[in-house]
Length: 146
Image (cartoon, rainbow, N blue to C red; front, side, top):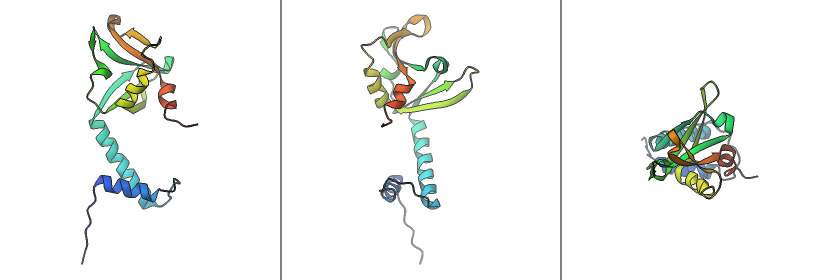
């Protein structure tokens, strides 16, 4: 007799977390494959709920511009319905080598820290927008524990 058990992605994710409970890497191929497949499915879901921007100056400035207002009206990150926010960073040859991906709420929280600073600036076409000049290193370092 063949028994077939169907699990949801959430259940599989929970099992994978339990297997990794020690916090150490697991060298078993089947576990790594399962985690890889879960991660691929998660990324596919994220992309469906993601707003994507491209920055051509970050390679020179180390910053990204996060618009929240245009022509006196809320825009950009203030009005997005996306759960995730992505920045494609282009280099000096306009090659797109890096994508930064962040939960929108986390990005909003980080931007709020700069609201009353010199990083809250005018930008965009004819300087009709307002946004936060966010150092890429701050975005990354926010989530790296020393």
